[in-house]
Image (cartoon, rainbow, N blue to C red; front, side, top):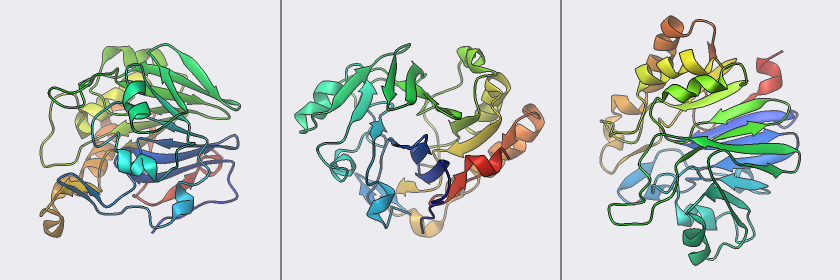
Length: 261
């Protein structure tokens, strides 16, 4: 069940995997939307059951081309007039699917959604959509308003994260994936906690866990669906003692004003 905090001016709703609704300075942003219950060979345990979770979106941030981050049936649920901010090289693919308001951005560039700034930064991940498919940059995004948030997209640990230290209120960090093992270019709970030592945000929230799994594994309730965020919190308590961590369950919302009060 999805919970909205309607009286908050700065609110985060974790929809699941890398999908989050960020409400900041009157702007509604959606990251890497996966909004349906089935995705190729994967199942979504907790797809949004209310369309108002993803209505009236001011912009969608796409971090990279992989199918679990760029899902065209989910994007079509948002409507053809939706504004998309995508990595350099991804625009043609979206336009081929009928989307008109597509803005490409590359590492180091900044754009705006009303009063909110969106800055593209590097992410260490595979650039290909599939083996012989199109390629585009992999991005993280710095979202700046009353608070400054880092949406890491999908990335492995990289040394340049240290350049963000002292700038971040919230870091949304991937701590797993959609299966029992992780491929190259991902952070597990330990590496995500090591990233906190570099980033030093005020608050870290684990993402990229809990909802996607291969067909047939859901009824087994495998550990990879539930344990990564808790392992991340445990590692962070040892490796980044100055950073507050908070697990937001898929479907839940938090008010940043309440967190930072």
